[in-house]
Length: 446
Ligand code: GAP
Image 1 (tube, protein in one colour):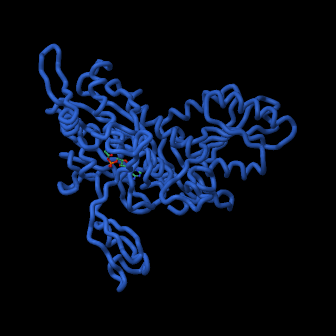
Image 2 (cartoon, rainbow, N blue to C red):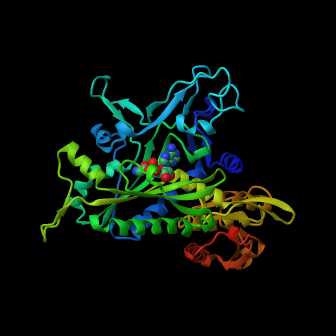
Image 3 (cartoon, rainbow, N blue to C red):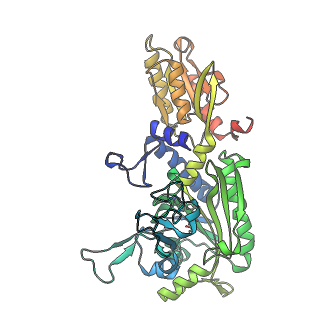
């Protein structure tokens, strides 16, 4: 994980937030390549949800919603962690994580074990961030930053039935920021207080819930492996009955083998009719599906695949990170699936003279119409390849003296290091072809 953190900062993927003020615990900023990579993660999720199916529609709901939302959803009463405070070191710990925590004064001991530890009893601490709406803080002005994107979908269920001409089974998908005042943070962007979720609520006839739950388990596992995650680093883990959330009758987590051990990437839950029934009760609105032909009416059950964009990005980075040796020189290379790679192609003149930079710039301008591309003429060619390898660029086009004679260039592959010659006019098509080809992590063979 340290290597990922260091590469992220060095190469502009992710920076600790507010660093000039000493940082703000567990907040991160995405730099240029991080933005491009996260955009690609989101785009692939949208593609799987919207473009490749015709039963899911998109939503972008507000972050601040009516406070009754959180009463109905159960978050106000139950979205809590049990915490203990130490009156001596002033640190706060999750009561159920004391065995993994370090005493503030004596880090070799757990809280409560050193002689001067003075712990309070466990108290429930709500994880929602509170703020107030309007110019004065008064009774009724309290609102919350959403702790999950899911509820915005339930609030819009009725709108979607009316406008989208969908009937169960159908889904509503949304990507957006969520906020939780997490107590146990750390492990880089794995758990932060402000993060991005990719959630889809799939509304089904009640008797089909089991079948669709299985469907989504399979779909979501395939999404990660098709984007290059090594299958032996991915698993499904069914929740034990005592782990289930208040709304869920079955949940399985997609887990990835992070350097910190097997950890949750995404949860897939059978939420039953909990949310629609609760919001119907609290809002006084009917939230049910009525079949106009048969007159049948029911409250759909919901299957929810809920993923984290930041966590997925971290898993893709961890899975891609590799080090090897080329002609006796160490290289760090991000073996990202080409569709996820922040930059698809780099254009490099071999030397900075003889008309090569001019031709390279022309090739670059043509390629960037179709792909995220970079032009680099600074430094030895080996060093420029290394720079692109480190950010995961799958292909590099090199313009050499032959290019000026016959309008051909070499196309270097990040993983195989093969350099094939193509006519400049064929380059775009060749890169398109490679982008569409199935891809497996070369680390699988290692
Ligand atoms: N609507 C259900 C729900 O929110 P969750 O398991 O609490 O379920 C879903 O969250 C996903 O959101 C997680 O699997 C994880 O990827 C991501 N996530 C949750 N809390 C997070 C945090 N503090 N930091 C980063 N990602 C988080």
